[in-house]
Length: 484
Ligand code: ADP
Ligand code: GLC
Image (cartoon, rainbow, N blue to C red; front, side, top):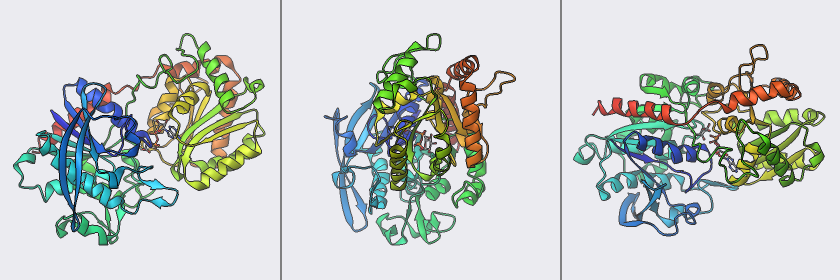
C-alpha cells in the first residue's frame, strides 16, 4: 500500500513537540507491515544542518497563491535508510528561525505557507510518479489537502483511488485565517460554507480536514471522546459529532530506539530495570547540570519537559509551588513557549535557587537527561491528546504524575497501595488542591523504597512500541480504501 504522510514536523528534521516524534516513528512501523511510506514537509531552516546535501533534487513546481505563482523545489532525503522524506524548499516561506510563531506572534503569512504546502504535496506526487492509496494528514497545517482533492482534483485520474485520513494531534490549534485570504487558495467558493470550512466568517483549516477527509482519528481513545464535548472541543465539537461515525482514537506509540535508558546516548550512564545504579548517576549529573546542591540527592526530584503553553497546566503549578517549596522536594524544568510562563519560571528559579532549576529553551539532550535523572515526571495538563513524555518516563523508571485527561489517562494507571498495581499518580480534576495532594501522595510513596521500587518496575515493564497501533492504522487505511 502506498502511503503519503503530509506533516509540518518530523524528527530529526524539524520539531516543536510530539507530532515530530510520531512522524519520526510511525512510518518505520508501517514500513515493517509492508507499506511504501513516504513523508513530505517544508524544508525549514532547522532542517538544514540535518540535510546538508539532498540525495536527489527532483526539480521545481510552481503553485498559484492568489495572483502570484510561487515556485518551490523537492529535495529528497531519508528517514533511517529506507523511508523517503521530501523536503519542500521555498526559502521565502520556510527558511526562518521558528516553524510557526515568534515572540511577536504567529508569522503573518502562515495561511499562505500552508496553502502552498497543501497544493505542493499533491503536485509532488505527480512529479515523483507516486500514486498514494492513502494520504495521511496531520493537524491544521495539512487540513486543506482533502478539500483540494475533492474539488480541484476531483476529476484527476491520478488521484482517483486516493483516500484520506486526517489525524488530530491537538484540536486547540485550528489554523484560523481571515476570509480575505480565501482567494489565496484558488478553491471554489462552494467550500466556504458552514458544512465546509467556514467558521464564524473565517477559514478554519482543521475544520476543512475534518469535513473533507474520508476518516478522522485522534491520538488516544479518551481524547477522541473528549473532543466531542464542548469542554474540550474548542468550538468544533459539533463538527466532530456530525462525523462521529468516521472518528476513532488510536494511541500513539513511541520509538524505543531513541527513548530507552539501556541505549540512550545523551544520559550520564545507561541502566535497565534489573540494575538501576546508572539512574543514580543520571540524577547526580542532572543536579549538577541545574546547579542544585548534591547534598539533596536523597530528595525526590520532579522533572518537567514541556512546551510552555496554557494546555500544560502551569497555572496550577504556579499556585502550588510556594507550598511544595516548603516540602523536601526538588524540581527541574525545561521548556519554551509563552512569555508569561518564561517570566513565571524565572521568578521561581530566582526565589528558590536550591530547590528549582529552570532552563528556558529547546534542548533535546537535556530532555533525555531529565527523563533519566528525575524520580518523578509531572504533566498537570488541562488537556493532553496523547502525551509522549509520560510514556518515555515509564521506560526510564521515572514515575509519572499526571492529570487524568486524554492520553495521560489512557497510558497511566494510578498506583494502588493495596494491590501494588499501577505505574503512576493521577489527579482527576483540574484543580490545584488535587494536584498538591497527588504530589504529596507520590512523595509519601517515594519515602518507602520497597513501594517505590514496585511502582518503578511496573512502569518499566509497560510496552508502548508502535506494533499494535501501527496495525490499527493499517486496518483503518484498508477501510478507507474500500470507499474508493
Ligand atoms: P506536545 O506535543 O503537546 O508538546 P508531547 O508529550 O506529545 O507534547 O511531546 C513533547 C515532545 O517534545 C517530547 O519529545 C519532549 O521531550 C519534547 N520537548 C518539549 N519541550 C521541549 C524542550 N523545551 N526541549 C526539548 N524537548 C522538548
Ligand atoms: C500534540 C499533543 C500531544 C501529542 C502529540 C503527538 O502535540 O499536544 O499530546 O502527544 O501531538 O500526537
